[in-house]
Image 1 (tube, rainbow, N blue to C red):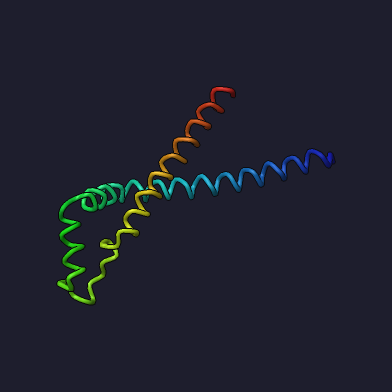
Image 2: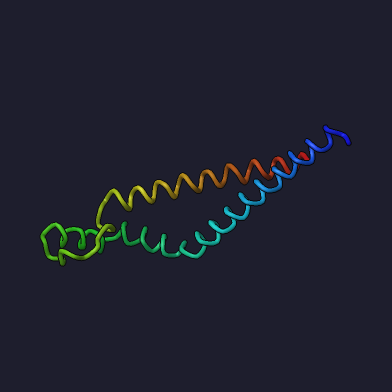
Length: 106
């Protein structure tokens, strides 16, 4: 038996397994993102609105129930999510451009 051939096949099998797993995970994550994308934009619109400011001020004045979950009124939580979303879109664009350029070379 040819040792190089066996090692090559084993290496390519590992590539198949790892790439297949990563592509499946990315596909699942992208599907989940597509599912909640409208919610994200709805949140962003709310955060940029006068309603958010009114709700924030009501919270500051103690007009909301103490047990109300209100992470959305934390300026940092929503802002950080928006920044992370922008970075993700940039990464997706970079990866897509790289993949398209690589495909053209093949």
